[in-house]
Amino acid sequence: DELIDLSRLGTRVFGNPDSETTGALVEAHNEKSSQNPEELGTYYEGDILIPLSNREPRYNLTRNGIRTQSSRWPGGIVPYEIKGQFSTQELQNIQHAINEYHSKTCVRFKARSNERDYISIVSGRTGCWSSIGRLGGRQEVNLQSPNCLRTRGTPIHELMHALGFFHEQSRHERDRYVRVLDENVKPGMLVNFEKSSPSKEYGFGVEYDYASVMHYSPTSFSKNGKPTLMALQSNASSRLMGQRNGFSKGDVQKINAMYRCKR
Image 1 (cartoon, rainbow, N blue to C red):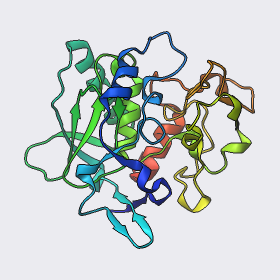
Image 2: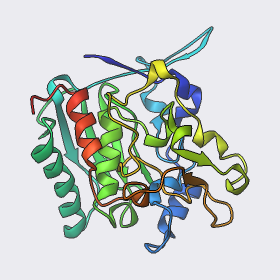
Image 3: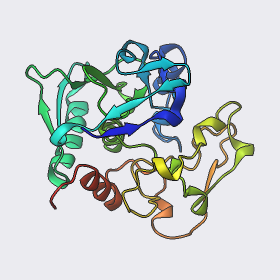
Image 4: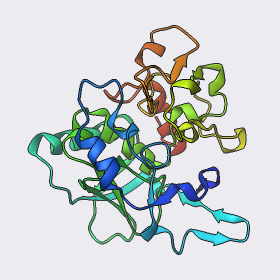
């Protein structure tokens, strides 16, 4: 039951699901857009949210600010239920995501019976979002229909958050691989491009991965359609930056390292 340190996220990670702005933006998302739908949210880094109803008792406001801790899922077993209103094709995309975890990692999504800690996959008009790691009790992974399920990669992405993973471009060494083009970022959104410190890194020895399903797209949070992230290396991997087709090789390696899979 190892802890995941979320302290760098501070109080910003807490909030309420937002239909007025996030839901409307995701509903209007064009599948031809260069941005991914999970990058449209008002949440931390677009799609990381711990609803205020989940704050206590695990999360406590203290004299030193907020103490935020999350846990890995014991044994890599994640009880889940599907409560959203999804089409047959959308359910197939969710099942495909689960199958990818089962075929490439030792993580197992198990239909919930009476487990206390579990994820509930829902379809509220509040965007694509998840919290980080196991909160304790019921926690939601929201996949707004239909645009959070247009690709197979978005449900994989949100479930990786639920397992305990952050976005790839928040890694502490990212400045060697990408440049943030501040002048193109929407006002107030530069906070979404913060880096972690080396002591809070979850790279698990895997090299920075442009092709990760957890990497932002090049125009994430753009105010003018111009790039906000520029790859500093030109190779086959960098050309995949922001892809939402499925796991990269590095994603699988990190999951298997975090959950100590014998593969």
